[in-house]
Length: 463
Image (tube, rainbow, N blue to C red; front, side, top):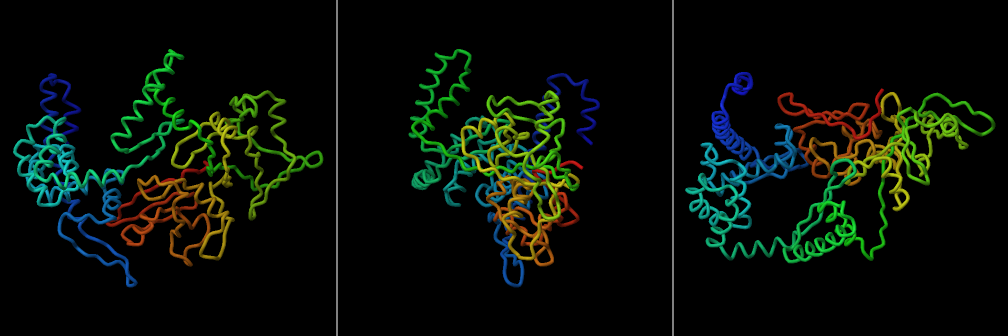
């Protein structure tokens, strides 16, 4: 109500008054986040374990965070699991180790992100040390420059518990890692956590090589030159061989195609389908081709494939006839032109998922066994793309195939199986949230108090 009134009548506010209102509202946001953290901390202290008789719950003191707390928090708040988990962990940490800082958040005087900086700066410290840091830092925290919170908290922590800080620093070096995540179309984001000395040396090498590149090509921006330099340094004197399973959906036709002139068979193309030239890599819409080229692409020598009771007419997935782009698991969307380049330079193992044009699924693949066949597994993972829990992005290739309904009541078919990472597979077994899988691949999770969350498959064809 307050927000609506402000949106409708706030045009008369002066700049000073508008920013003053924004500042006052920040206090409400801080207090609300503090209250949310308190509630999350109470929920996170309940540990659920699976026994033969079913789920068993044990309630710990506030400060304990159950392994499934982030998932529970994400489902009820609609946030990503990472953000929801951080909120629950922050509420638990403030309750157990930083009570004075928590009080400042609850009164609206300190923002949640600043409280998080204090908690992060004290990583590795025991409860007693954290309480001492909290007692010294809290009286100054509300008025402190947010940009100095982390450094000041670390300074106090080093004075209060120098041995614990040193031990934690030595331990974190074993946590060095590099990860990749899907970025905007055509790009992949890299994240690395490396020892400081190693990172400094790497950055120096990247900067030096990027400077050379910009001397040769003055149109290169500095970020572009650094990206090119990093890629070249990593790939220098390295033989690259990529093994990627790529799901390519193909439309099927339930009617039997008519053979024409001997062994040639008809192939149906949509106007928006993309054709990649095998030699130049040029991308052209099927509708934009000249009539002779369209006629040539509309026939093939091989007979149609028969899968179950469906007859599929499939254009071969090759350099000359790759259609549209595709999603590389854990990397991101690759457009059709880039696909042509990848197929030329890297050995890619292409997995084809055949989808029915009416429903987007292939229900004819089935088995009476508990374990799915390779064909079913390939189809389900290509359809899902990722774990089907709300907010999870783990690639389906690294997930379990789970029966949406317990087998044997649930069938071992594409319409009965979902991809769940091991963590969320275990979460499902707590029975607090129940999945229902629709024939088109839509998965709806039903939770307490009639709450629902719906996830969509990565590949689905419109009716």
